[in-house]
Image (cartoon, rainbow, N blue to C red; front, side, top):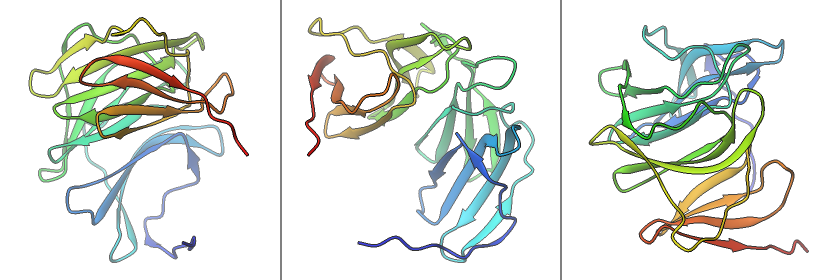
Length: 213
């Protein structure tokens, strides 16, 4: 297993951090949205990178989300979903989707127990739901809240702990789905803990300490 630097061509994006990226269903195109530039500018630009041609293309498509970084991004049934994030003025709790086939952005009108504005959270997809964990508000107050969004009903709901164990407050962590669990690692306050935030079918939290050798 080795790393290799790719020599790409086309409309190469400027240097950035805190952006998101997602693959379409073909696995051939990577879409990159937003972020924070090295000259302290919040971004709302949108790019597509084709893995076969190794070429970037800037997409000037109307209706995209406002400038932001520290948002989350997931894909579900041919669409890319952007939630939350922040810029120099505010944090966000809006939800946008981009359809890979129609190449159109849509601001989604959601219902239910909508999460508060946040940044530095994580989001994963399991079955027909997007699960959003933790993050902080615009003033950097960190939380350990867990929400799920039903793609079909366009409805949010808060997920309560199934066994009384409290997950740590966190932001800038990472998260993936493994089998029927959402696995979270690291984050701020700085730690090297690995823990299951949620066993999705039972809504039970299980904390796992790691010893690094």
